[in-house]
Image (cartoon, rainbow, N blue to C red):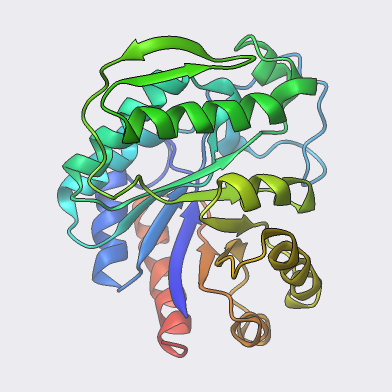
Length: 274
């Protein structure tokens, strides 16, 4: 079992560089960080977790800027987005950001992606919430073309460009792994465009049947990483029994001292199962 951490990096918590060094010192294999470009004041979309929207959602750093800073001060830590909101991102710029980070970090990028939930936020980016799934799929295909072709060209419903040169190319070939986030509605996207499923923090009892349905649809052994996983030993043993590849233990957004203390506890838990 591999253990990483999922968190929100903000201007009020531990700095990205201090967090990256601390994770590598404690033998975590990866860090996945959340993204929200902004939060509209007049938000009608309910928070999926229920209740008020937690404060860290309002203050997230740009994930690729934060991960680049972390990549510079670490050597082994995998640098993941959890998740990058593809419906809110220009595919040409995002492809360049991912490839640049992969080059700078020596091939350590994992692109965790999703379609998002905050309809007002995505509308501010010119995205129609009702078509965000098709838009996401098309942008992913366009990004793969930019990463893998010397003269990249794409013509679709939402993305359209004639042959272009786009460098750098990623260090990882054919491109950094794409971890598709979401529930069962995302399974076709995982099967067609993903290298792994980035599952929400479902219990092992819920996750087992879902993994079976996903692998039947994809007709392959799709690796599974669980996002914001519990550090409860019973839950961890259940995930191990399912053959889950990686658990991303949830790290609350806190100042440095409290963060390091919490990481020490998470590292002790992870050490029991390595």
